[in-house]
Amino acid sequence: MNVADSQRVASALENLGYQETKRPESADVIVLNTCVVRQSAEDKALGRLSSLKPLKKKNPNLVINLMGCLVGVRPSEALKKRLPYVDVFSAPSDPTPLVQHLLEKQGKTLQDEAQAQINTLLDETLTLPALEQDKLVSAFIPIVLGCSHACTYCIIPSRRGREISRPPQVILQEAHDLVAQGVKEITLLGQIVDRYGLDNPAYPKLDELLYQLHDIDGLQRIRFLTSHPNYMSDALLQAVADLPKVMPHMEVPNQAGDDQILEAMHRGYTAQQYRELIAKIRSMIPGASIATDIIVGFPGETDEQFQHTYDLLAELKLDVAHLARYSPREGTPSARNLPDDVPDEVKWNRFRALEALQKGIAESIHGTYLNQITEVLFEARQKSRWRGRTPTNKLVFVETERNLTGELLPVKVEWTGPWSMIGSLVEPEQSA
Image 1 (cartoon, rainbow, N blue to C red):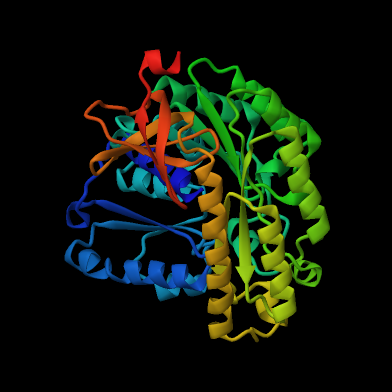
Image 2 (cartoon, helix red, strand yellow; image 1 turned 30 degrees about the vertical axis):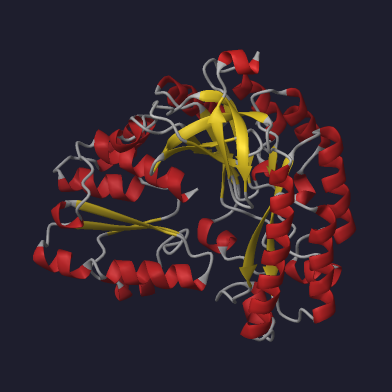
């Protein structure tokens, strides 16, 4: 989501006549787009912001824009007082305050026409920023902004605001424009992406939107993330099964495998319901890959409760598990109401146990690709090899002198590991 927001800001700045620079010292405008899902991310953002103070002192005309979840839906007076050298504060996904500030700085007369001018400018920001145009194969399109689900550990609802689905015509236009600029794959984004349209009865649901996007000529792949088990409908799964351009890869976090912990997290489902959903996905979309998120050390988590999570992962054998150790975030219900009572050493032990388990699972799954031919969409060169992904989102590397950027090609897999695979291009007579 932050990558998509940053691209939109960069495009808006280019429409105002700015150009990207690699050196902060030579910049007229610096935008720091922040993520604060974890406390460490917030600390890092504040540290980076502090490092910009000497630049501002040296060049008082430098415009510093703080954007994203550190600002929240609206900047607090306390934040403004704490950061007096920041010129503009922007909520997540909203370049408007920066655009307005820069228009005023250029001496434009805004007054009653202010919002119209800003809207016109932002409506023109469907082009990729110049720094991306020559290399971007896959692009992100946010379709749901904010979140209204309110898991007890999550800061996102208070920082990104209530859930709002973007108009379908805007999403379709962005997709058309991106494809016209050479993008081959789009990923639809939302904190809970499969809730798209539920807040507005006039909008299509996600499955219906996928059918509309599928008709775009030149678009080769469509993905979406992140899903929530409660909202992954049969209609959505059927759309993935029916539409060749929609990739058979799901991001469906379970967060824990114990019902009491899930209830304390306010997730809204049981371990058995999650188990049944995974079975349904695999039944309706054979060969689909599934990723999950898991938090260890949630307040009150006992050894037995952690074992339930371990056992569920061992049973389901999911393709990817994004692991995190619980840390309280000020302003969340769990931080207010529950003691952070699982020792850090225990959290690390549980984290490493799941990490070792998942490594073995991933090695086994990747091993099934060995000596098989699979289609790979190549994204970029990485050192001496080209990097691409299979339909199931497996990372594949191929070594060749040929420029593979944006190519969708058959690859024979010759080596597999837990995190990636290596292969070689298949010549036409080999695949015939």
